[in-house]
Image 1 (cartoon, protein in one colour):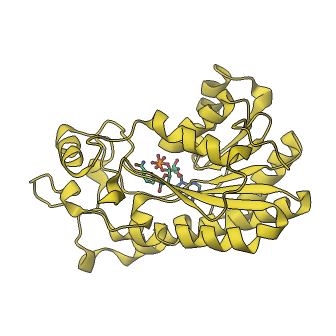
Image 2: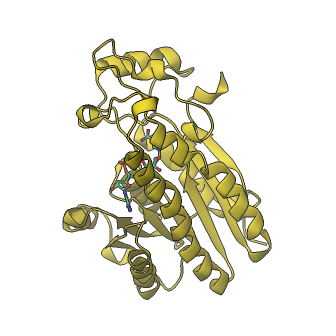
Length: 274
Ligand SMILES: NC(=O)c1ccc[n+]([C@@H]2O[C@H](COP(=O)([O-])OP(=O)(O)OC[C@H]3O[C@@H](n4cnc5c(N)ncnc54)[C@H](O)[C@@H]3O)[C@@H](O)[C@H]2O)c1
């Protein structure tokens, strides 16, 4: 029986979408907790900068930075091979990469403001390709390795919008054109809870666990109007600081959660509670 501690020391954790807002923060947290971390990101231009950034704070023997496009099976196989070559095993996969229309100051202007009936279907298709198919095929590669090893742990990153519909009042800034949280994100993340239960039950007897984390509203320099809307609609009255998402990731990667599989850990300041 595993010792049920919160430690992730020496566990090998591969995080997809690792150069993004949550991915990078979670990788830092795992390294601070003495895990071995593979930062697998899909921004080739950023590889060197991310490597330099992490080398400034962490021992390079404890992490690996690599390119991983979740839509490309060869790229997944390369990352998996690099992980095994450097660390010899894969304890935890964090299935984090996704396309998500952002409403912070830096991304607000790129929002496609179409209503549902006019929303471009090619954008939906692309989000399904990354958020759904991508997550499934990364999990396939991880499960093949975990079966060989005889142990493993998968953490799928879901969303509050895997569980409920967006309240479009959050995205109404009283301006033209009116903006909406788009359908591509919602449909392509909705599968996560049931995919998590599928993997959990499929591999329950193989010593492979699978749980999901459903975050909501991580602060990333959003403007005043967004923050005002958010505060009105959120039970806790504010957005989530990126540091507040890390504890659940450490917990699910650790043996303290050894009897958990098939769960969705909701980290939403109560957003889905009313
Ligand atoms: N930020 C939030 O408030 C929030 C809320 C709920 C859920 N989430 C979930 O958290 C996860 C991380 O989101 P984030 O906020 O850090 O977003 P982000 O956009 O900052 O990071 C997502 C990363 O995924 C990468 N990506 C896109 N296409 C890819 C591909 N084909 N292959 C590999 N990587 C690819 C992007 O390059 C990016 O670095 C996502 O699954 C998202 O759905 C975020």
